[in-house]
Structure formats: structure tokens, C-alpha cells
Amino acid sequence: MLTYKGGNKVGMGTYWDLASGRKIDVVSEAVLAGNGTATYVRMSPVVMLLSGPVIGLLYAILMPFIGIATVVTLTVFKVLGGRYDLAAKSISFGWQPGSAYLAGKKNKKEEEKK
Image 1 (cartoon, helix red, strand yellow):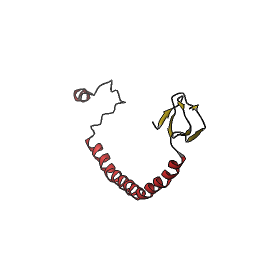
Image 2 (image 1 turned 180 degrees about the horizontal axis):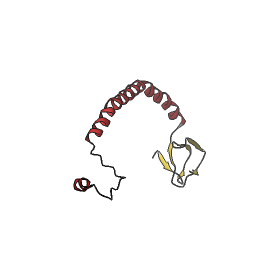
Image 3 (image 1 turned 60 degrees about the horizontal axis):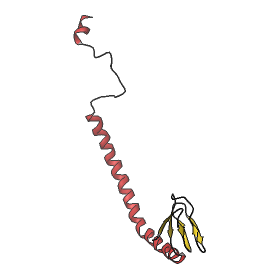
Image 4 (image 1 turned 120 degrees about the vertical axis):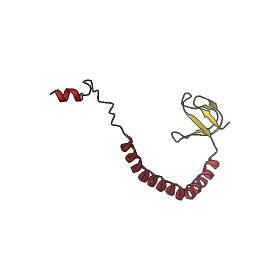
């Protein structure tokens, strides 16, 4: 079991709260803070130190793809967004939900009499 909730009794080791970045070193035995709300991960410092370069390598490899995907997404939304607005305006039938029109429409016969 690698994950522990706040309030659990745990043995010796290093526990990391990934949400807040807190590190707790337990020398013998202790109860984790948080009353069940915080989630802690038990990980040795060696594993944590070795995972840093691996995460950095993944970041360096994937960053160009993330940049390309961002540029493509922004371009598509910019091009198709204008077309969507144009289509929405041409299809719209003029309904305005904030307007009540309680007086009704004027009849043509009434206008001719006046």
C-alpha cells in the first residue's frame, strides 16, 4: 500500500502530500495529519530523486508536441470560430428571451384604419 489518508497510523518512512507538497519524515510510528482529507504517498527519497530526471526528460521530449498542439488548436478555433459566428447569425430567427412582447403584434387592418 503506497497511499495513506490523514489520520492513519503509519510506520517509519517518508510521506509526501502531493496536493500541498508537504513532506513528513516519520522516525518510528506516528499518525498522519489531515483527519482523512489529505492523501499521502509513501516513497523513499531515492525513488523521489530518481524520478526527477525522468519527469524532466518527459517534459523536454513532450514540450514541442504540446506547443504544436496549442498552435493548431488556437488556429482551428480562430478560423472555425468566425465561421461558426457567421452561421449562427444567419440561422438565427431573432428570438430574444429577455423581451416579453405582452402587447402583441400590431395587425395590418388596425394600421390601415388609422
